[in-house]
Image 1 (cartoon, helix red, strand yellow):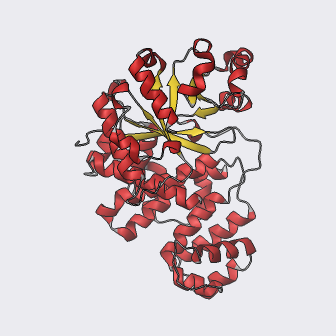
Image 2 (spheres, helix red, strand yellow):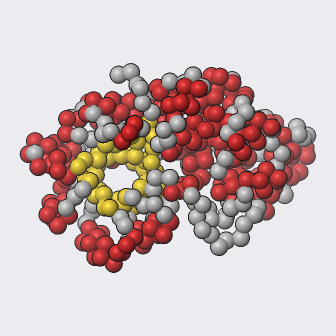
Image 3 (cartoon, rainbow, N blue to C red):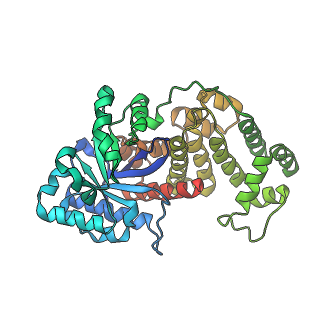
Length: 402
């Protein structure tokens, strides 16, 4: 089926702000519900992108949530997805049809997850675990006490509870206290009120210094001298260069060898990732994962137009675009601490210049923004190009995290 729409994602967080899964859906134009054909097309496309030719699941420990209707409960694409990583979201009212109920129980017996929306928990009662692995609860911070009582029975069962909508951090904390996972929309992009000290910690200061030196093509010996001041950093570089993914072919034991083998552009990119993970103030795992996905998606979107080398810079812009929130300091202060190219600065401050439009498009894919289509058209990218890059970036981020 020719794609005319764009995939958007929403993260599902556990009480510790870790991403346990994503809901993927077509961007809703004017909030019209998707047709059965469109939902099946999404399932089909996603299955083709997140499972490789050897049937390996590319999203590691993440669970995917996909909207479903009764007509697609027997879709072939379901058999290509690992059942324990797949959850179909259904309206509870659909289960009034005996055939739908039987199909759902068949899927549950095969290990496929089912999330029930709009469920009357009292009416379903003890049958719930046979038909659902999750229920969606409408969370409101208004009366947490009565909600806690309502959810107490469920907490004793195997059925997971997912809260929605969760529109502010106070509500998220209330959900976390009740043991609920939560779909957070774009809440994770809202800076969280924090009492921690802001600014760069010692590890970040050294990483910034190294990035500065790489930008100025400093001598490998000078880079090595700075690296040696931080044992953890040196260890991470050697572990990275000796990882199966890098494939050096032999054990690299000296920092100088590692730096020579890696080269300046990949080193800069690695340092960018490291800077984000070295955050301590108000550190949020979901924010870090978002930064990695955003950077990689912006890079993939830019590759055809700008070439691989330039696209590396777009990756840096994508990662840096969340650095102010990861570090708990203003973007101006981030930029004062490190010298970036004019193109990267323009992308960060106003989403303009050569790289800005790719960053803006990657960002729009996170927010279910109406701008996705016009931004993609401006870059001469079709829905399928963007959707393929989006799921590829999601898979890549899981490997980085690992």
